[in-house]
Amino acid sequence: MDCVVEVDTEKLGEGAERVNSCIKAMIQEIEGMTQSIGRIRWDGDGQDGGPVKKAFEKDLNAIWVAVRKLERIYRYAVNAKEKYEGCEQSVRALISTMH
Image (cartoon, rainbow, N blue to C red; front, side, top):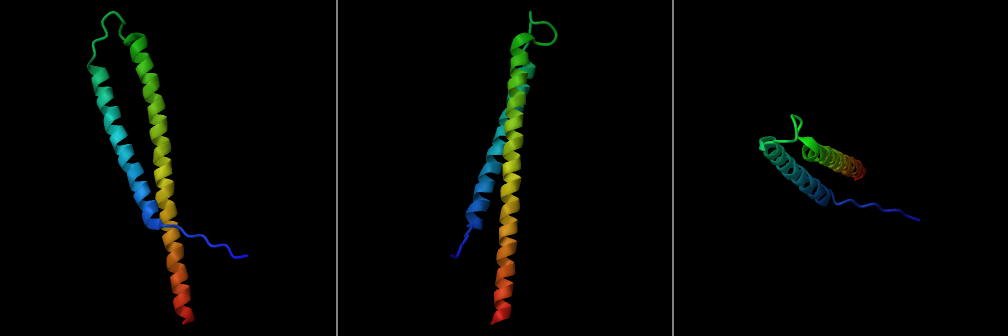
């Protein structure tokens, strides 16, 4: 039984770039939110900003974890694309020597 695996490296690359664009947009939004929260006066909540600021920081940490995971997915896809393309080139070279 023959097993054929075909990978569309162009689509893989396009998908990786879409993920990367989303990551960049998320980072810009996070930075904007961080700047906004930094400008809020926390009167009555003490020096540390109280429970609202602490909740924001907790949520922000969770968002950063998600961003880091997306970055790993992006790097994996880019690496996979490069390896598939390298394999395709090796197969082409091998076939060309058979002619």
